[in-house]
Each structure stands twice: as C-alpha cells, then as structure tokens.
Amino acid sequence: MREAVVISIGNELLNGFTINSNLRIISKELTLAGYKVRRGLVVRDDTSEIAWALGIGTEHDLVVTTGGLGPTFDDITSRSLAEFLGVPLEENSEARGYLDDWYRKIGLPFTQERLKMAMMPRGSEALRNPVGAAPGILTRFNDCTIISLPGVPAENDGIIHSIRSRLTVRGWVNLERVYSVPGALESKLADVVNRTMKQMDGKVYIKSHPMNSESGNPGVILQITASGSDRNTVEGDLVRTVELLRKLLNNKETKLDLFPIVEDGEPG
Amino acid sequence: MREAVVISIGNELLNGFTINSNLRIISKELTLAGYKVRRGLVVRDDTSEIAWALGIGTEHDLVVTTGGLGPTFDDITSRSLAEFLGVPLEENSEARGYLDDWYRKIGLPFTQERLKMAMMPRGSEALRNPVGAAPGILTRFNDCTIISLPGVPAENDGIIHSIRSRLTVRGWVNLERVYSVPGALESKLADVVNRTMKQMDGKVYIKSHPMNSESGNPGVILQITASGSDRNTVEGDLVRTVELLRKLLNNKETKLDLFPIVEDGEPG
Image (cartoon, rainbow over all chains, first blue to last red; front, side, top):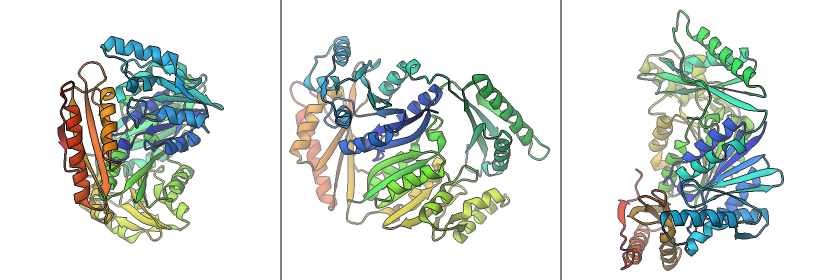
C-alpha cells in the first residue's frame, strides 16, 4: 500500500491561533486516492524544522506540505524545499505566467513581494491556484513525489481538488462507511466492535467515536474502513460488516440500530 | 525557553474523518503557560508509531499526547506509554476511584471495558476528567513531563484547563495581540511587516494571515507575539510595535488602520 506524509508548516498552528483544517482535507483526498496517510507533522516557520520533516516524509511515496508559500518574509517553504533538494531556487516560468494572469485579473501590479511566489526549486512543476495567487509546487526526491500547497484553506483545497485525478493510486481502493448508533455508550459497544472485527478476519477496521459524553444523551459514530485491490470485494466486506454489527446490536437486551451517515465513501 | 511537543493519536485524524482541534487548544494553553510548542506529531493507533513520537517528544521539556485513552480495543495510548517507559501497566487506584465516582454518578456498572481506563503505567498520576470517564495520565521520562489526555474534545479541553496552574512556566511570559487590517492585501503589507520587525530588533514576531483571497473583499489579520522574563517589558514591546505599524500603514497613499481583536493575550 502506498504511504503518504502530510507536513503542515506555520507557527500559527503551534501557538493556538489557527486550527489545522488543511490536514483533514489533504488526508481525505489522499485516502480516497488510495494512499495510507502514515503521519502528520506540524512544524514552525523554520528552514531546519522543514528540512527535518521533509527528511522523514520523503522516506515514503508521497509528501504533501501545506503553508509557507505566500508573499511574506516567513513564507519559506519554497526556499527550504530547494535547500533540501540541493537545487537552486529560481523563477519558474509557469508560475510566473499564472501569477501574471492572476494579478492582471484582479487589477494589481506585480511587486517584488509577489514575484517571490514564482520562485521555485529548479525542475519544479507549478500547480495553478484556482482561487488565489500562490501556485503550488510539484517536485520529486528519489522515489518520492512532493506536493506543496499554500496554507490559506480555500487555496489548499482548491489546488488539491484540481489534481485529484493525478493523485489516484491505480489498482487500490480505500472505502469507508459511517453510521450513527443513537443511545449507545462507547464503552458498551467496545465488545461488539471487537467481535465484528474478529469475525471479519481483519478485512475491515471499525473506529468508534462517542457523540456526547457518557452522561446525558449518548450515542456513537462508527466509521468502518476497508481497503483492497478490487472495489467489489471491498464493498462486499463493508456490507457484510454492517449486517454483522446490526445483528449484534439489535438484540433483546440492547435494541440498538445503525443509521447511515456516509455509505458511498466519497469525500464530503 | 522551555519547549513542548504535542502528539495527536488516532487514525481518524489521518483519513479525513476528524479535524485535529485538540492541537489548537493544547498549543494555546502551553503557549500561554510560557512554553514554545516546537512540533506537533500526528500518528495512527499503532504502538510503534506512538513510541516513535514519544521518542522525539521526550527530547524536550514537556510532551502532551491526546487520544487513545478510551475503552475500545484501539485505545492503546496507556499501554504504549508503559512500554515506552519500560514499566508495567497496572490498575491505578486514583484512576479507579475517579472512574467509580463517574459511573456511580451516571448510574452505570463498571465493566471490563471501563476498567481498561484505570490501567496506567506504574508511577503515573491520574488526572481527574471533569466531563467524562477516562482520566488523564501524568508521568515522567528522564527530564521530560508527559501528560496524556483523552481525544474527545470536551474531555481534552476539560483536563488541560483543570491543570492550567500546574503548567505555568515560572519567570517566562508569552503574549500576543491580534489586529485586523481591513482593505489590506497580504502581499502589500509584507514590506511594512518586515520593516516593523527590523525596527523592533527581533523582540516581536508578526505573522500575517489573509482574511479573504486577494480578490474580492480583502483584509489581513496580524498576530503579534513577544516573549520574555518581564511582563511589563513584553507588553511595552507589543504597544510600541502597534504604534509603529499604525504609523507605517496610515500614510497618505494607503490610509490603512489596525483594529484590535485580542489585546490582552488571554486564551479565547
């Protein structure tokens, strides 16, 4: 199975200012594309920290970085990436073209600070930003593909959605189904979840998430995931898992039922 | 300056199911307590991955983990922590007492799955959970303090708030002020931010965050942070920074102004 690492760059993620929403979006896209996201690393705006994270990430098949591609002094992802790769940072003509288009469209001049966003490691492919200025960067290190996205959420999401078809891992599918079990306590479901996973012989993974605290008005969300090379087999495993869970939950004592939230496994 | 690492544990954080909101809350608490949060690590429900993260984190002064303390089979933080520390996992009598209280309060029996939440590495201090079942764990490795919190956001937040006074680093203060600059483009502010930071001689750090994309209705959020051993000096540096920014922004050409969002640096 192909593995990915997501690197989130920015002091604001480590001082409580900003929530790391980009990790969720990137992880969702990569999971649906067929990757296992192995780790997330969150680092400060610091070249040596970014190099540390790239060193760990590039031991896997794919690295996606988010943040640090903007026009300000502490946007240092592109420079750090060039240093890590051992290639010069230079004006990328594709990126320059995208930026020219963007600033013409919004009627602003091309300043020195804005030119900074066209500077990329030699050999990079610039990824057009459909909703903002800073283009993304696609480059490689040994057998690893590195994709760098801007940190502004709309721009992060816009670029990764736009390259969805290129990310797809051929011959591998990850699917999920999500259900709510109103009235259930997580500590009570634990045994049912264990027995179901054992009966499914490790083919599915069931994660339970309590909806409320164990007092008050409880409920559990069950996220069922399965992976494999054949979509029909994976879908069949999910269906069989839900049937098993339903049988174990809806007995004389507990009378619990599953209600679908997501059954097709497509991104929300 | 004392450094901390936050470890977020859970597959759901790496497959797009759940947003890592706990990292923001923990980082905010630690920053206000006087720590620099050096890195965030997000790992799967896997003992060797947790060990990897603990190995990196415990090179610093404080590690806070979140997630994996619940009653289900894949809640393996406590066991992984015991293995990492090289001590046995055993029933913690404080934790057992807290759990007894909790289940008595909500009128439920104490099952095997629930007892699991009382199992902690030998020598741990149990941290009472004010809003749920699973207690937190406080333990040490060499010179590093390790705090483990449950992943349910209300429980994560409840426990870390409850130990706020114990986290405070004596003799060190981190303060922040946050302003909006309506009408500003980040790429245009970049130069003003650079000049202000240079004039302040590295005593403050200014991070700009675009409020919208550079088209449409722009604006920038400026987050100004400063640290030091004397609160009055740090506050004075922040005030002087805001005066400088205001002077540079509000000239004949740009006519921009700063509007306060946070001036006291207390957590939101």
